[in-house]
Image (cartoon, rainbow, N blue to C red; front, side, top):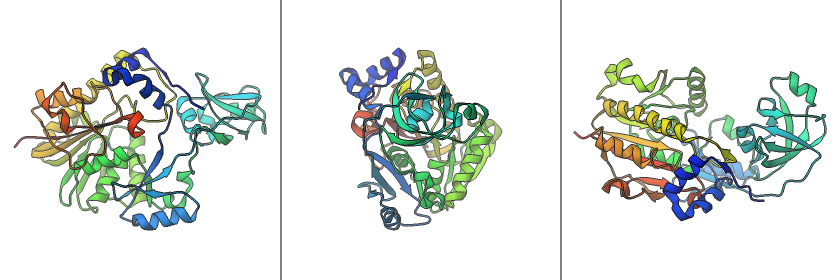
Amino acid sequence: MALRPTLSHAILEALREVYGHELGEVVSSLSSPGKRYYLRVNTLKATRGQVLELLRDKGIDARADEHLPEAIYIPIRGPFKIPSAGKVVVVDKFTAESAMMGSHVYVPGIKSFKGVEKGDEVVIASELGHVVAYGIAEMGEREVLRARRGLAVRVLRSAFKLPAIRALEEFKEGLIYPQSLPAMLTARVLEPRPGELIVDMTCAPGGKLSHMCQLSGNMAYVLGFDRSSKKVQEARSTLARLGCEACIIKADSRYLDQDFPFLVGRADKVLVDPPCSALGVLPKLYDLKGEQELLSLADYQRQFLKVAAKLARPGGTIVYSVCTMTVPECEGQVAFAVEELGLEVDEQPIYLGSRGLGGLGAWAGLLQRFHPHIHGSGYFIARLRRPG
């Protein structure tokens, strides 16, 4: 089974700028989750060997990554053929992409449950008609209409298959954290060290924030910011589960230089991981963002970079990362940082992806890109330095 994602004209053109004649191959790869599902071992609580043994004892095919000592992965099985059924449950984009990987369907993600009775065999489809899974209804239509939460469909067969990671004791005890390889690499590129003042400008849900605590042995002064109360609570829960120590503050990071003036020129390291078009997050069934939305995202990201350049001390490091591939959100932001903010591009301590796109600056070879059709995800990392 091979699903082809539905993409807007604006996204197709943005990807064409990067991939040219490889565009068809790239688009086809977006509906696949890749070959590996990565987990980060929380070395504050356990060794990689201990976690591998625990998972394997549960029958999970967990393997050690070849490059990062805290990274393990589980091979992703599929794609599988979805059985047919007489009734269809329509779900939102996030729920469809989750069900595609084997997650059950819960009430909040349902768009249509028409004519379904408890015990019915159903197929699960996106709002655009992508069939992603097959299962048994745990509720009827009337119950779903009344309920605000609860299990609606138990998935029995999905396009791809993974263990239920968040149900594992190892997850609940904080021994593992689901995180992509490029996301793990981002904290490695930042190189957090004991005693440093480190600012994470958009810290939720806490993956990179906790990784920085882990890599510094909980001995760096880590400040995490997010403008959403809900996301701040989510990040705090992540830190508590993993046993990480950082200060998380509700604030809009675009104004940190004004709201927290004592940070200006003081941070040893700053992570800028702003909201982006997320085209590299897989699997992806559809994305209908328009040209204006893509341009707005690039403008939004520059607002974070402007402040990061003020917070970093002379000689300090700024790492910029996004889970997407468009030029304006990737190399375009680096060009802005160099030409408008006076930052310099640094070589990264480790490269696991491809180098940046040429044509925008001599520094492109110092950047790092991950491509969906090559690496199983799309991602971009730049390491910048404030002169001084």
